Image (cartoon, rainbow, N blue to C red; front, side, top):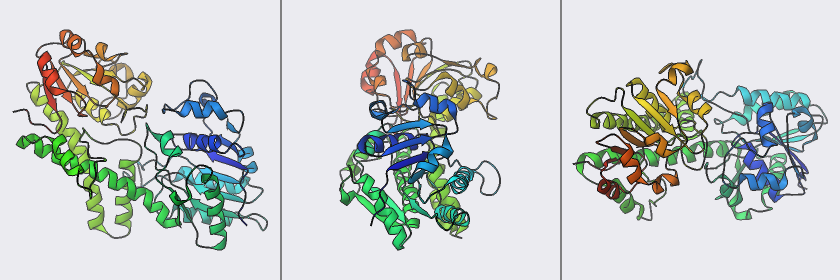
Length: 467
């Protein structure tokens, strides 16, 4: 008999836990869903009209169910105790110090959450690993839970990785390509898998719900992101060849994408990939490979990240060379700061690297992004490469409220995020407001270069020569 889940608790109210559990509440009105976080400011935002995460469609889902069967609270222990099933969706950042620094995932939050469940729980629970984690993390979670379990309390561990793309997360949750549920290959493990599957079956076709063993599920998440990032790095490597030979990367990508064995997805050249998962997951895979004594495998995946960094540096170098080998005191308008359109997330955004390089070259930088706050931008730009002093940073960087304001008296425009609104700008107006010659560097391949040239701009695009 399958366990019936009536109450769900999610530990972590971030980019994964918040949207995922909001959609579960939306599609399963008979299940009480409580999302908890120790960050009171974040929980207050989830309970307000101004949600802490910008994601198209998220507000509709949250406002429809909040206060009915969807709740946000800081009462962690109460939510754990009441739940039949607990999603662990806490942060797993790359370690900054110690063994594996720069590669391995820091699992301190995962362990802390697991220990709290073990200490607080007064009844049996299904514990679902939702964070992106290295292989065999579930094993350590299981060890902690079993060591702290009682005769009348059992913990079943599942892996249920997310496959969300920011900007389309709600659609990805409503219409997923697949839902992956990993469990122990035991009668109890199968029973727990079916309990979670029953929840997803409320709106996901059964043939899209895949059950695997725990380790396959954990590795599948890392593998999927690594393969997608690999495609981006591959097309970006080809973009460098295109610029050197006169080939057009869009035409090359289109021709390759028409091959049914390849397909067109993730073949858009750009200044580089970003986001919370791609780089972190590949580095995780590199570390795992090294720990398993597979140095050639580690070197292979490390090259995907190295190529991504090279693409950003190559773009900056092209800008400086084009601007007569110096950008000292020149004003650069950076359009976009989020790592991709339709999100306010800046984690690993290419724009951060570009702006830091511009600052180090003593340029004056105007930044505009429709969804990223001024506070977030200055937080991301402060650090040892530039300065921790925000007042000093503000002497070089100005955050503005429109693309037109950013471009006024600028020497060059750099498109760093593919926001749709940048395609619709009045570039004749912008051209008149800029210093001449006026340069545009399209790092996202979204602008009509010929049209811009007819206005008077000198246009440089990723993956196209400028002979």
